[in-house]
Image (cartoon, rainbow, N blue to C red; front, top):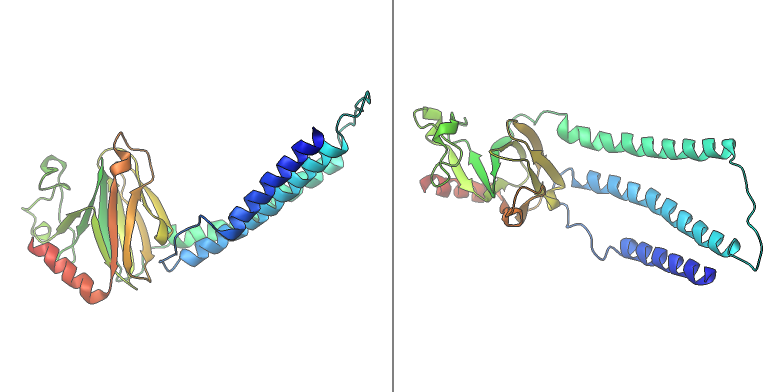
Length: 263
């Protein structure tokens, strides 16, 4: 029985390593400027944890075989070793803290630095179960909004059209477009519950919290259309909350904006 159990553990370990090393079910290709940094940090963490996982399972299988029941042999008691406990606790802490520090550098670059000057501003307001996307008009300013003016049919963000700056704002539902190779400054809001703005190819995921305006920024370096998913359980129709991000060449983006402004 001991041999069989050890072989099963080793087989599962080998299968896990093959699945991860072969990347049979992996991330989509990164399309953002910061994407490669995220991927490198992930691979570093996965490699170190993977080595620890393999060593632990190999050792477990060995102990199952080495100390399996043999006739009437009785188990012997071995008191703990303070020196060994301090050693492996220290090694684990050093590895964990090192990975945390390296990961924080990547995270801080995205979340603690202000968007670069000249970044295109886009406001994304989440609600059950759609994404409301707003662009400033030709004046480059977002107009005033008022909660009492919100109407999910024709004014989902509550634009106050008595404000001249609001009259040229462009609002779309579940359709977001940005120019390639340009810094984007997204202002995330929520009208009801916590949602999470998630575009896997961007390597960008950020909660949208009611009452808060959360700023994120990124630069897409490849064109294409990508899904905007909500990664936070937000209600019964959570599975239907999906939009689309189109990364376009600058001329196509400007034409897209003009088309939306005329509607």
